[in-house]
Image (spheres, helix red, strand yellow):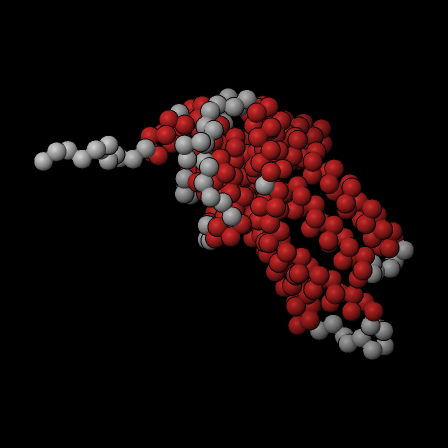
Length: 303
């Protein structure tokens, strides 16, 4: 713990350390992200295989879709969606723990980081829900206000006026997940903690968000867009995409998630510690905590 580099960092230093951690520990972060999403991939492949089997069954031999079968399809889709959000939460939380251990020069492993998540994954999901709810309610209020006035221009103006506050809100809550995981805080308390820590640093966090969004869309364009075009062409020709094409698209989505997913979490976890060092002298607190409380004397006293 003595060699932990705890000091205030500029935005450039945060980004530089982010990519250094990502590059030097690529298999650690890829493994943390891949393990949860591999379960999702298996579920998606199973759903695609069932859909392809149904589509390839001749109409004369195809059984009628009973209410039970329809409920099974809807239930399967809902199960995949729930699994998707659970895996996102688990990957985010485990990555936060891994970054924390690396930042504080502690032993780190894929298994150790994932094992620390547990039921805290639901705390991450609750944070996602609360942030989305606050933004969604604001947009709904703007839309209702415009409809009541009866002018579409007011709807557009209300949306535009809420766009900037929504971005600021997202930036102010950017370190809520690290705070919830590393300080063992509830969802509401973690949001309050993030709002406090990010005060005065919104622009830096916005730049990080912008870089993460750009990296995500680059990965989608390179890995997924060609396959998505082929799938849309099949749909336009009133044909069901083949199982092989669906499998390739799901594999491409899996690879892009594994490659890009950890970057934003690494950056915001480092930003969390950077803000604590700047505002709360976390470096001094960590140094004091790492010192032995009762140091042994250098030599025994003479009787």
